[in-house]
Length: 282
Ligand code: N1C
Image (cartoon, rainbow, N blue to C red):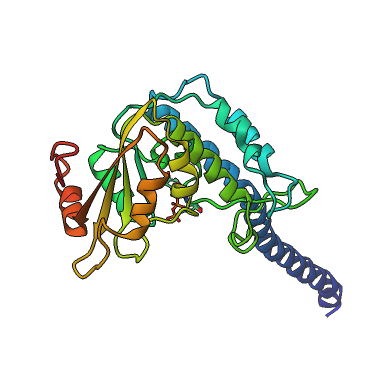
């Protein structure tokens, strides 16, 4: 009995200690992953951009391999960190754009407006055309969202934190700057895939209409070939008023053509990628 009486407080202490240990372990098990997730969230944009940068440099010889992905990240974040999400000037991305010297190959540059998904299916399947997203800068930022806040050092990377409704925001300013650069570097005949399911396939307030068309250099570019992608019951044709507007606003010296191409034909081109480039819908 006496032995039992002396063992009881010790056992109780052991039990209390074990319960405390378990509680600490449970708290750590919950807190550590949470901390990693929230830290990872802030760092995930950086990781994505740097990984994409390294992948592009490994797989493409069109960009100088002297480029350092850390420098690219710094130039990128300097453009918008600390700025009001709704007031990022397009010129803020000048340093980033000027850091990248990429060779362009003539006659295969492809612009698009409201046709992004089908265009990228096509460019991934055939390699006949180059869109902005197939170049270094477009590849880095495609489908990403980013912004900061006035006088903040933080970076946000969700649609919730980075409203896209106000302009020029961090994302729209980037695409405007990168698109101007892409158009300025174009040479030979260029193609623009527009959406024939819309009543106005060309809009002069789109990035294609307001930035790319204006930045084509008639000393380097010959014809702007519009491919109007149409579905079976679409009424829009190459005679559409908005396309006549496009023809009118082209910089003097540039030629224009337009062809209606059924979407089924584009799908055939995607499925038969060995068809000679350019021959698919001609
Ligand atoms: O406004 P848009 O199309 O006419 O812009 C498309 C035009 C293409 O020819 C591209 O070269 O401008 C370039 N471009 C992109 O490459 C791009 N990738 C992702 C423009 N915008 C791009 N985005 C996002 O899509 C961006 O957020 C921008 O606001 C939209 C524009 O798409 P749109 O209206 O179909």
